[in-house]
Amino acid sequence: MVGHAYVSATNDAYDASRLLLPEFVRSLEVKGRPVALVPNRDTALVTGDDDLEGLKIITRIADEALDGPRPLSGLPLVFENDEWADWEPTPHRWETAEP
Picture 1 (cartoon, rainbow, N blue to C red):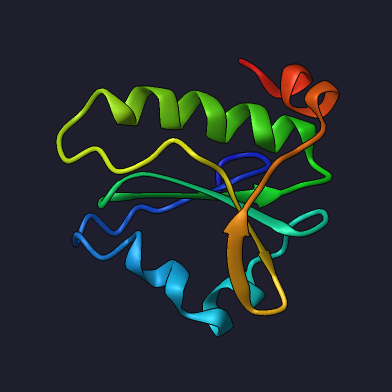
Picture 2 (cartoon, one colour):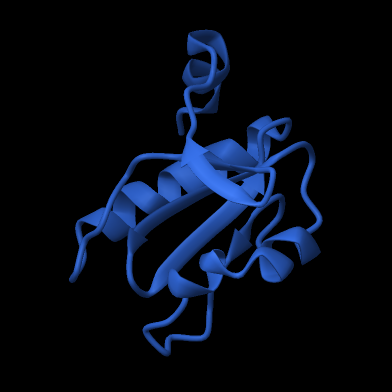
């Protein structure tokens, strides 16, 4: 964990895949619902939707990781009812989370 965010660090090319395991996601202690960014296969970033500092952190790290090898997506996802869905935060919340 880096401050308010979980940052994958196994470097085994399965970091993004671990987010498909509901028990793994439920084990993460975050403020609010888990929000994830998966900028490449080696980087999974998770924080809570009620954690503005965490949102800033994962946004900054994802921006940097998207410039690296094997980019995937910069779109945020929210974990709710054991499923990931597109996350559309209120404009004010996302603007305040920008690095």
